[in-house]
Image 1 (cartoon, rainbow, N blue to C red):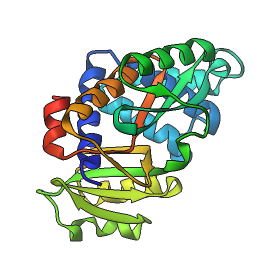
Image 2: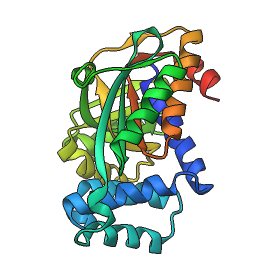
Image 3: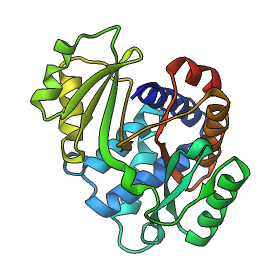
Image 4: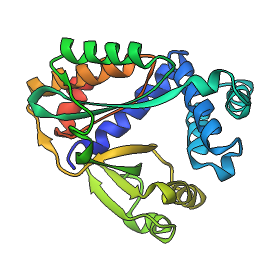
Length: 249
């Protein structure tokens, strides 16, 4: 999984910085609203909402904004009902598979925008089912391995983590969606500082990408992430961490 953990950490840090500038507040608000709509307004009983609220707090979103987003989601009718979750599938440079998660009030607009970004940045939008089979939905927690040993992460195993691996200076703790929140909470209770914690689509196989292609690929991913309706982008590329540092810096 070379580079996967490093990319997760880079994306997390960049998202927090962007959010503090206000650039991502609308995406965070929408994620909270949809999570509350679909699973109720109590974060303790709604893992998706708890994760969305945690990310909003990390981005320094005001408490009132978070509470309004939850209230919008739990209210009957209105704006929350108009938001639709859509998964787009496509290909990037070098045949890399790309999954794009979006929350949109206008599927036609978002589809056209996503197609345009793919075509202008070395990729192509595929048909439903074209690449989704290459990914599994998992919870991924990234931890700085220079500060902790595997023994420090045993709380995660006891809480249900299915795998812990070490790569490119970080530990990567992987859990099934249902176990993601208990595993993260167990690590926090044990005093382990978390670099990033995300529900994402993990690839079952990776495609090696050279630096020139990686630069174009990261550009494609970042352009997709810039779209207001796009909530997350996943890709099955294999790029060394030092290359990622150069092309994503």
